Length: 112
Image 1 (cartoon, rainbow, N blue to C red):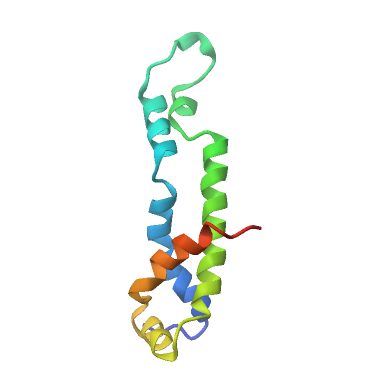
Image 2 (image 1 turned 45 degrees about the vertical axis):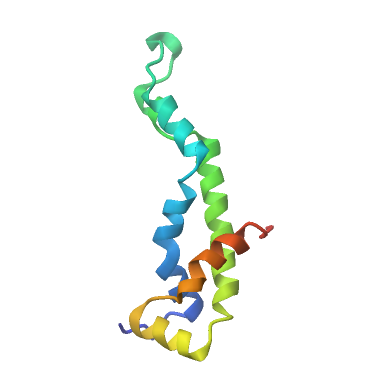
């Protein structure tokens, strides 16, 4: 995997980004969104089916904020990778087993 123009921080983010996006959609809020979108509402309320099914702006903003916190956490934690872990990241595009769980935990404490 040739990655001459990407930093280790960027490579680490790319290695965990998809899983973190899945994580950011989980939880009770996602359940409520699905439930609200599935429930029929009165047709005369001025809401189209698209606006009832798609996520409210607040939920999207919450997911986006969570992804920003994940990104900051991944960036900070990637600086702690050992030389061997960095070599594996560059060669295979994978992070160590501890990395993802640490990003999720670290992100809980990120303030921006």
